[in-house]
Length: 73
Image 1: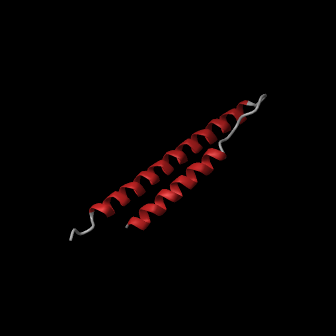
Image 2: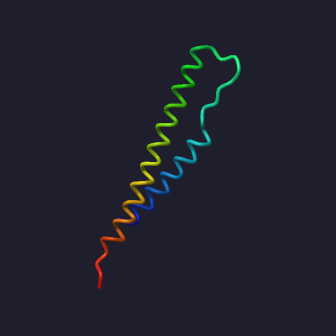
Image 3: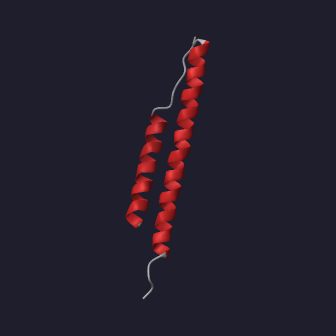
């Protein structure tokens, strides 16, 4: 279970880094349609960033649970 948690954290951080690097950027003189598309792209990027944060959190919880689930000698 601990390996799964570590993998989830690694994947979450990687996705988060990728989303940060590919943030949509506007330009001067955009039409209304381009502005709306930019807003949708920014919202989608923000939502994926939130999901990657949730993935990191669940991975961290799995690691904590795996430490607590070990049998004591």
